[in-house]
Length: 134
Image (cartoon, rainbow, N blue to C red; front, side, top):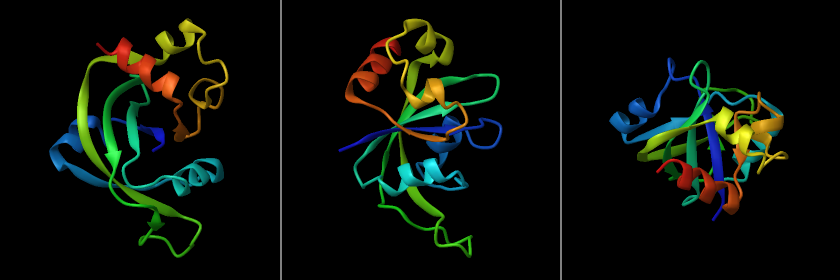
């Protein structure tokens, strides 16, 4: 099992939307590096949901419920989607400022590739985020 962080603009789709929907298609990813990461996802992988924009924080958890498949809204086979299921909203959001201040993960794509919308999460990173979230 792998773990991932998925970024979303909360004004477009938030953790509350995912909770309401229970399961959603995670789409709209266009960057080659993010698509490469999505193609590596498997059913059962865990995800952290990260709100971009003004929040800049990890706010929730979920899981991948389908392997990647071609985006039915695109005519280009490079684009893939997965379905994500809601897990829970974190008790305390974990801000990017806290993550950066810790200096534990200087090589994490969340920190050094801020525009990348799908990034892998190591076990150490996952465990620390969960610890910080209460």
